[in-house]
Length: 361
Image (tube, rainbow, N blue to C red; front, side, top):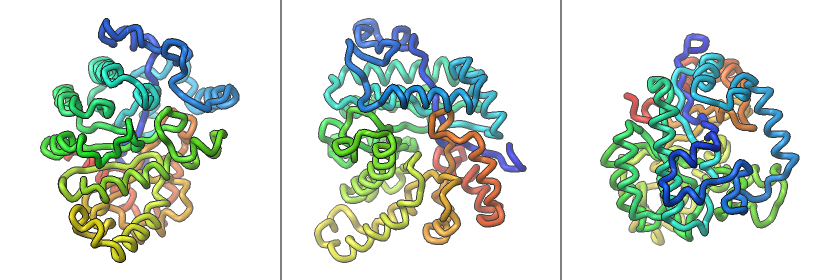
């Protein structure tokens, strides 16, 4: 709790310890366990990460939460950092996992071995330290759509309330690909939230990756633009029309792009509805307001104006702890906006809305 507000951190991260892959991977897949340098059989799981970026990232993470850094971000230090920040509940996403099974040419069965190993470690080990505070978001394997329902059901058995996917195409399949239809159906039936979380430097098709090389440019493109196209995909492809109770979150990309994108899609729909009317029955903005949530950044200078345009019932907060982008004072900065946003709005962003998204109510 901070300044009288209870807080759900809708986007926090674990740092997977290197040894866990050897421990949790099925024996027949341990040959693929990544090295300490995060290489699989000598090949990096990422692309375009410079030595300077790695050094600067480590420096910033150490400065932000030195005790957690020294403890290698174990569960105990994670909870301690939550208490320091005023966070009551944190939903946990991977770090290396954002890259590890985001390799487009990875064999589907190998990617599945990684997601199963990650889920076991996350739920059985990490979250078990304090299950009231630490909430795992399960990983599923889009390389093998026919296995995703089974993975989802296992996550539910662990007690998971949500799963995450990358917004990028995997093996040429958009999120609206018919192969994913059974998965969407099961998520809707079980009331499982689906979060979309991008990760720069992955080996999936990513906006900007073929044009730029700097983290500055790659990160500026990847997070908002991949989310924009993912939202378009689930609307244009009929996912949200076919599954009106499916809840979908768009994380770590800010919300400033959303008013423009909803306006643009509504304009296109008004002019070209006849082209997509079999799968898109209402304006794109109506699908978003009905089913979608998006995380905000306290530093977005026009946040109050955005709430005037899109309302406040679809906004959530994520700290991105403990990544290079994480700002330790983000919550304090958000509190400074209380007069501009109102206490009711902050209450919704920090507690009511994320609880609704993650089915905690």
